[in-house]
Image (cartoon, rainbow, N blue to C red; front, side):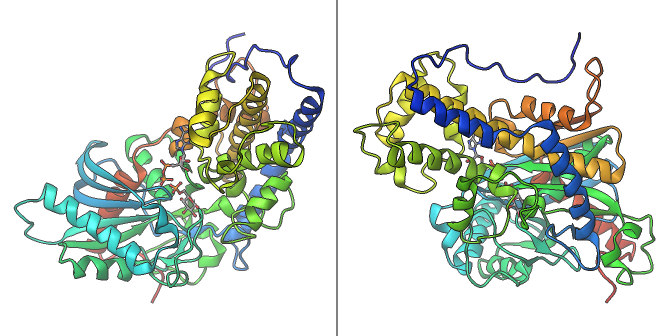
Length: 483
Ligand SMILES: Nc1ncnc2c1ncn2[C@@H]1O[C@H](COP(=O)(O)OP(=O)(O)O)[C@@H](O)[C@H]1O
Ligand SMILES: O=P(O)(O)OC[C@H]1O[C@@H](O)[C@H](O)[C@@H](O)[C@@H]1O
């Protein structure tokens, strides 16, 4: 049988014969609560579809389903020079995009790690940090200065409501952010003020979510693109609906917009199942939620995204060591008690260890946590990382399947970005298997719906959306609700 598309990763060949019975029993319990069978994926997807519809209704629901005011498909012939910034959960990027037309583009970019304290800094510190990064970038790449302010596409990777493309009212912080004075406010004037304070010749012309940018950038380069996806610090999906299928926009659209006018939707589906009806949450997920700055929010994201995967592993290991005294006897666990001390590269590196004695895992725990591990303990650590990684990959595709079934896509290129998609070992193969388990495709055929690497959504996507917006404004067309 020839199976096309990625295959599930090879499990370790080693055995668990040297693992003590008590620990074996714990592992089999954890395998039970962390494994998501095909039937469960199908049940979750079914509920996901009703939640997507609810988000577009007048009444609303758990999933925000934010109209992104991108009312045209990219043609691939957009041209011009645009600046873009991308405020993600881990990094700030500044990108200069030259749209060359013919689906081609050239980018120049700089990446600035968000200072660790930024999640709980003041609003002025946040906007000031971004304006300074912009100032450095413009000084470096435009040393002679500019004749007119550079148009900027501002990619803001948080749920922001928009009545038009140059507005973004932050609904709530996610990914552990908790900065006062921003929620409920329009972030565009805040950034523009900070830019003007430093006399940086830049004007914000569009506010974009990174996932909408991913959708548009990928469609600019590949017309088969049906959705943009982020599996990074956070998780999200974006796709094009049509204005006539968005009940909550009824009576709010301008005359130049008809029922079949496309509308990019920033789903913000990290909040899926905040009512806890279908997701198989464990006590570790409940603890992460309770201890987060926004308990009760982003239930789906907290089970699967980059910001949290290492934390799930840490909580389980801590329970096995501290409470059950089954591992790390006599070790100093002080470091391991630090919340979020394990970022997602931790389980990723554990799953990547190619050695049967897991010597890379030994080094990781020794260097990062000061913990000496035995071979049986490392085998348990490895199995836990596999369970957490596989659960994330499989749950992650429920949003993809729900959008495809809602829109009736029989085939699709689903453009994905983010470090978990790009770097987490086995994510791609496990995600592809999850889609097969949901759709039950025949074994001897190519997968009709595939996850493909996205184009640079927060850079090129922001530039293409800025170009589409400028074109609409030049034609006197609307880019927001009826005033
Ligand atoms: N090797 C890795 N494998 C999987 N995830 C990783 C790896 N290294 C870092 N990460 C996670 O990826 C997330 C950063 O995602 P990325 O998409 O690069 O940034 P952003 O979310 O700011 O756009 C962080 O949560 C980090 O824990
Ligand atoms: O690119 P990042 O930082 O991983 O963000 C992914 C998603 O993270 C979610 O928490 C945000 O609400 C979304 O707006 C965002 O798209």
